[in-house]
Length: 393
Length: 143
Image: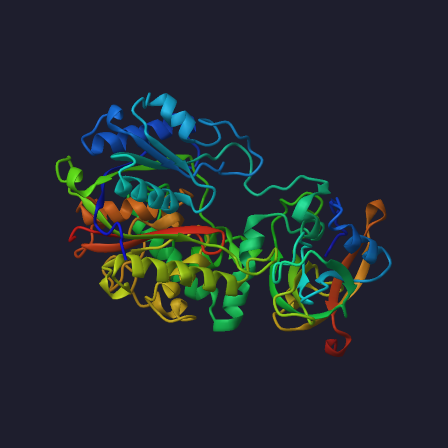
């Protein structure tokens, strides 16, 4: 099989300041992150000849202006005056890691040499998930009349099944959330820096769509993360230690005709992503020193840890216990703090942390062994991507 | 539900109209392929199993089981703010594996919505002349 294995590398990364609500607009934050990643690589904007992005507005119904409510390819190409572009991509699903897969393929194919990939998220005034329609159109005619009009409720269904099928409890999940907040507490890029929580805080958290509490959902933020992707050869001449992309995969389709995101769909779809990735990378879970798996909703961590083979199906809620996933554990999970600690950044807490750890630039949370890792983001049955990164090509 | 919610009114399309017409007549009808006999909900323009275009609505038993559930505690859904906490359940209809309908759970506190319990359909009139299929725990299960 012809692959892109280690032919492409990540050469630079940067975050904008990330806070619950910024007094600067999302456009300014995205420019911070994109220029930051370009400079981190030792490049200039005129060197960028490819751009790749997942542009969906971070909140349904909050407005759709490029550079204000979301940051797409048009805004970045204009704002950074990228006049040497030969390639762009805007994916419709899958968050940061799917945009990365596109860029890796474009660079490997020679369509561009230096590709910029970013994801910006806005948190405009008002509450997330508010539903105001009095008429239920389209598929919502079978949902909204029952009061099902909110993503937390939709994503709660599979978690209710997971708990019933495998005997998982909220006490089990407390371990994951507390660990994320512990990691984020020492991550200067995290929205929750300096704010660890206790198991009691988690157990007492306000319920939204049971079994999902407010602390099972990542906190909306204003922020952006960006990376620069280039050829392995070129990366060796740039400013940072190259982080090679050993394998990539994208997927995340649901194969039953239904409005319901059920547990079987998650498990089936995530397993397909994992099979594709390990085949493409020529590696497996035991080769990973740590794992950066997507945690926009807490259940996703169980789904992905199981699908990627770090533990068996139905066992993730036990696998994460006893310090196993802590910074000092045998498989650190989301050392950045993940989305639960960094905020709702759609995969940048996974991708950028993989790079920073492998380069030895993760500060206080730097892992002892960080040579090869998994990064992944997106919903298991709504669009997701994954990559294996290494400093040992 | 503690208080009766103000429910958003469904806006049927040509594809979904027969579902709402049947409900108004006190019947649960689900779209079915007339060639391979697979049921679909929501309705589809082509059979997703055999790709036939011969699709029609047929009455179903109205019996099923709770496959998944959530209990909404937050008041941010307009019309339902005074009704929290309330359960939304995924009903898997007896006719076919993976044939799901959404519903509330009538007459009992939301925490009674437990996965695996058998349920059966009832019909709740709503504004605009619509009738909403709703499920309750099956009679055999009520103590």
